[in-house]
Image (tube, rainbow, N blue to C red; front, top):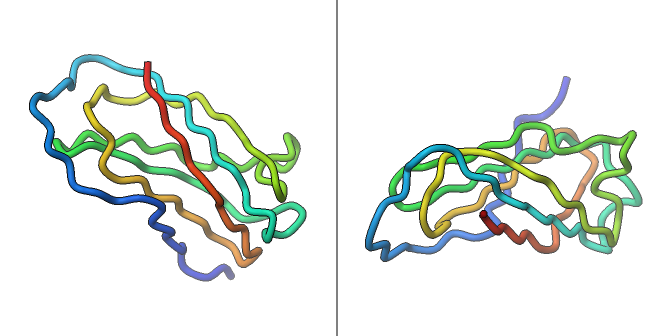
Length: 112
């Protein structure tokens, strides 16, 4: 039995957005750097959600993959995620479940 999902709010800020770009599907590159104070590797389940001020939400479930050695201590992992097009990202949430104490350091998101 696992504990409830732990939510880590990495960044949340207000948006002053002038227009809305919810047209089609866009691709985002997400780079997550794991803290050097994390365990050597993790068995935690890691997901991410981010969005804009207009309610466009992008969610990627289960980014973790022990066979690919994701989220090892002092490392960066890059992911390509597709979702609705939006404007300025206002919130980023990392979801971690399981009790392995994985700690993020930075999250960078770029869209194209």
